[in-house]
View 1 (cartoon, rainbow, N blue to C red):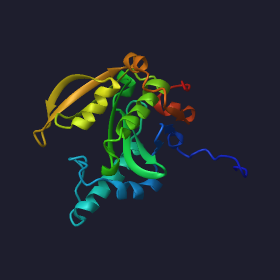
View 2: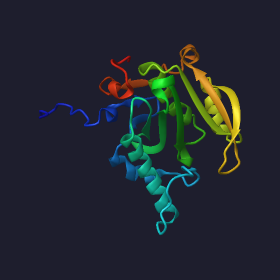
View 3: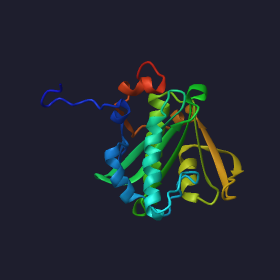
View 4: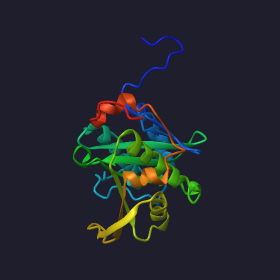
Length: 221
C-alpha cells in the first residue's frame, strides 16, 4: 500500500519514463491519453496504410481505431528483442503531438528509428526538433544505442530539415510499394550525437525501473 504523500510507481514501468525539453514535456502514452490524442490528431497525418479498415466506421472512426490499436500493439508485443515506445508530447499541459521511438531489431543492432506528428499550429517553431532530440537523448544516453535511423518523403522539407539539423546523414532513397513515393533515409552514430551536444537541454527521468524491458541490467542515466 502506498502511504499518503508517497509517489505510486506505475504498474507498467515504461509508463514512468518522462522527458523534458525547454518547451515540452513527453511521457509514455497511456490509455488515458488516447482521447486527447484522437482529438489532436491532424487530418493530414498519414497513418499505417496496412492497418485494418472497419466498414461502417467512416474515416474519422477508422483513424481512431488505428491509433488505439497501434498503442495496444506496441505494448502487447513488447520484447527486449524489438520494441516501439509511444510518447505523448505536451506544451503547457496541452497535447500538441506524438513521438515514437522504436528499436525493431534492438537486441541485434542497438539501432533506433523514430516517427512523429505535430498539430498544425505548433509547426515551424522548432518543436519537432525538440521532440526528436528528447527521444534521441533517451536512446543514446540512457539506453546506449549505437545509431539512429529515420526516413521521410523526399519532398517533406520540414522533417528532413529536423533530421539534418540534429546531425543525421543521408544514406539512400527507396520507393514505397503502396503509393510509389520516394523516401529519403538518414542515419546518425552515437559518437556524432554526443559530439554535437544536442542532448544537453534534455532531462530524462524514470528510466531505471524500465531497463529490464530493454534487455539492459542497470540504468545508464
